[in-house]
Figure 1 (cartoon, rainbow, N blue to C red):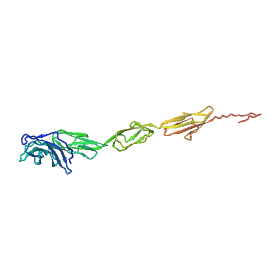
Figure 2 (spheres, rainbow, N blue to C red; figure 1 turned 90 degrees about the horizontal axis):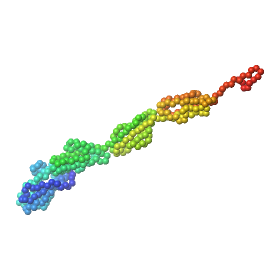
Figure 3 (tube, helix red, strand yellow; figure 1 turned 180 degrees about the vertical axis):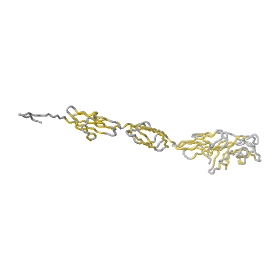
Figure 4 (tube, rainbow, N blue to C red; figure 1 turned 90 degrees about the vertical axis):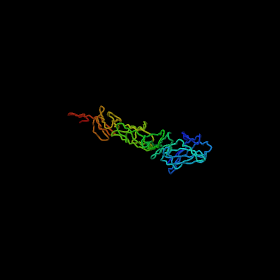
Length: 354
């Protein structure tokens, strides 16, 4: 179906001979289409000054110089008419004559040729302007603007069955034939760039495409012995997260993750009478080892070493190997005891004895 708005041609056409020396200009005002694809063109001209002119005739056809139809316009001062019943799939050629009260008719004017450019959107997602069947005078230019709706982008523009790519405009220059232009659109895709440092992974990763307005969730998984250090979204740290969701995506984003090795604390404590080295809260990375030395003070000896409340006897050292959790080690001491042998010979005693 053709659509359009009134437009006056910049080109004019003069009769070669018109009942004497007077002249006549023929111009296209507009070309319209009805809902049943029967089109109409409105033409206008200057009034003729010859005294005997009683009207005008618009001759037209579908090939140059071959006019098979005529519309008669009565009245010397009637300077426009509408030609109805035209096909929206055809190009037309128009010429005007004037006639007098005796039935004499002038020669034809120069031709006014018009061509049709059919412009439409294939599917949804945007507009092409102007749209419909656009009538263009021969030799003039006709521009089209292709505009996607929010969240969409131009997918392709096809001109006369030839792809012109994702263009947002196209101009037919010096139109001399009928044409077609079709525009198609697709949902816009944004890119979320997802990366992870050593010690874990993020899923999905890489350049992740997300359709306009959709949500996208990323899952962060540390390797064994590692923990999430930071999740950076658009270069801003959100702290240690195991998951993050971008909601209603309308632009490109970035997400990156850093990891750290897990650390465990071994609490080392010694009672009175000795020491344990190192002591206090001792940090050990995942899978690492840590040795402790238990030393009794002078006059003391190790009584017992407890590791996670389990006795290891009176050892002087202990090593935690392949650490995968927190632990505790405690050393206790007792004063040393010595034996004095006391003995008395005949004739007396010693107390205590033994």
